[in-house]
Image 1: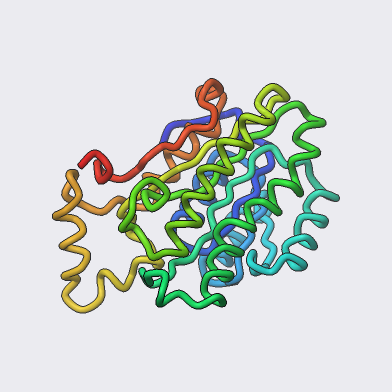
Image 2 (image 1 turned 90 degrees about the horizontal axis):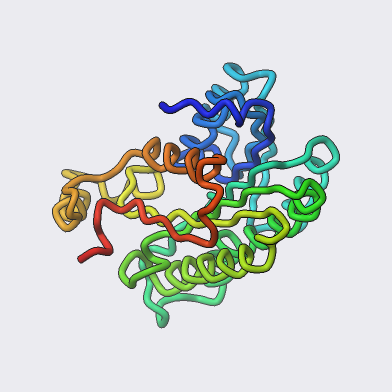
Length: 252
């Protein structure tokens, strides 16, 4: 992995840190020497491993990001202790590819609160101090479902499109004050969120790979590597962008 010495002693907040892309991002920044505040609804073996291996630089707050009150408590605690340099809004859930008529109001709210509203709350929670510092990096987890149809159901696709629009406006509004906001748009990434595709003989996973020009699924570490670059000073002129990590899926 490429070394980014600038991340040493920087403070990073990462949501969805217990598994998948969020866990890979957490590992990547910890290995770079960053101080990481990890947020997740699960306190699993991955979190415990981070706690054991990086005792001086890893902190964990167990929170359901879809719950505003709990999330605001986490923001308040972190802000009282540290000045956040980088915010990675990675947490997200799927909607089982349900079309609109099969989407209940409860499911719609759950997807929107987890995937989109949490980003709004976390950004507004940490942005004021970033503005005081005159520097801050925010990377929001979009998806190819934020660019094309078919990557999720009605609620998931709407939320991911919303993330892209929110991120572009966020960067437009605050870039002159030292803030950079960008999106990552993964395609087929082998994470627990997509484990259903690998069930049985993995026929669905094979089908997805066959439809991807790169003819494979990516590993979460590949998204984490892109995250390090986008968060670094080397990417300082990248603003309001949507970076696909999709093996060529949307080029079709």
